[in-house]
Image 1 (cartoon, rainbow, N blue to C red):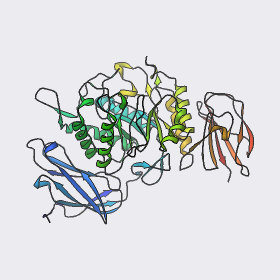
Image 2: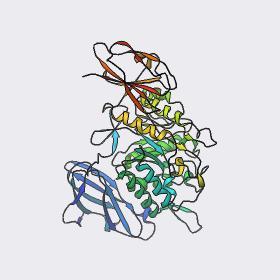
Image 3: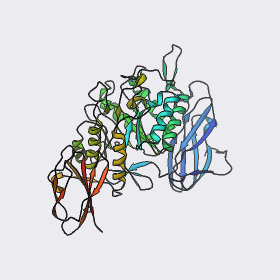
Image 4: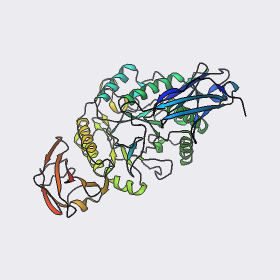
Length: 490
């Protein structure tokens, strides 16, 4: 057995689900990003977790680990470099910090849960390139998010080149070569340190960072680096970022527009991602037109772009996984068909998806000075749907802890556009852009129910008089954006 080197006299105290980091000095000659293999095995009792390390520049090699159980853990390094091989250490994992519920993973059937078992209901928004805008605008975006209802943010790792987003970023993910281009075998630690600081800030706000690893909107060559470079980048990103509890992996935004990558290529990347991530963060891929097969085992949930959210029921049945319509068009005034729906329409889509037992993402695309548009650069929110998303989140979080499952609207009422339930004691019915004066309901016989009439646009809840059971009628206000919340009386 090789001799080990214990550089630590007593275990480091680390809260559960926090980031543990250990650094070691090592070689700088050649290309340490590819020349040196460095990893560790973390052990607790009969359990062991393999973690890949990474080179962080300036002769510093790092290991990161997110412990998910309390008590003492030990670790033992492996490396192609003798000075980094056989190092030992330990950490004592204590109770999680106040308010920390752990990373998000699978929940009940079509839903998500934090590691402590509490349901996570994604109320997301999109700021694709906000991490590439410089400190002033990034700070403004974080200030806006602190007051917004969102708990998930879709964001690109790579910078983005697209309409209204043509500025040059301060940081790039790779070092430049002698000709001034990018060397895809040498990563830029300042770029990743900056990204990590933003992920940490989001965690402090209770926001999941849904990291988009690839996308087609590029002028620097990142969209077509070749399979070897793609896998190397993926491994480095996972080694650096997987220990942050609020990370999600979105393999690509509009993957089907990236002509250089075939389905075989995406499958290979997903296998590598699943194998490299010791913490099992959520994994998805986002479409433009054609769907990737969300039924593949490495996909944890469906991330969908589609303007017809009524298809959520079909996707739930087809894939039997949580569905997030991350892009159902954007509230705004862009001269683009995808970027100029009204706040009323966005509110309608958020509510209809919720009433179908799924989730929809918010997005905003109002023109602003210097092309500062929320969907891409962040900044300030201006739309009418944000406050309605906050109201919907309140309604959702008052619901059953296991989440809702869709039912055919006709099973509950004749005119509802979408309906869902939790068991036989809680129902949601949503009428969308219809405005009936009353609804005939078919409730379980032998039980009495109370009914709240919810005005999703005006953000009002009114209790319908009396109690209801079996076949019954409930009066409605005769306007759009109305929902019913039906709860069994104790």
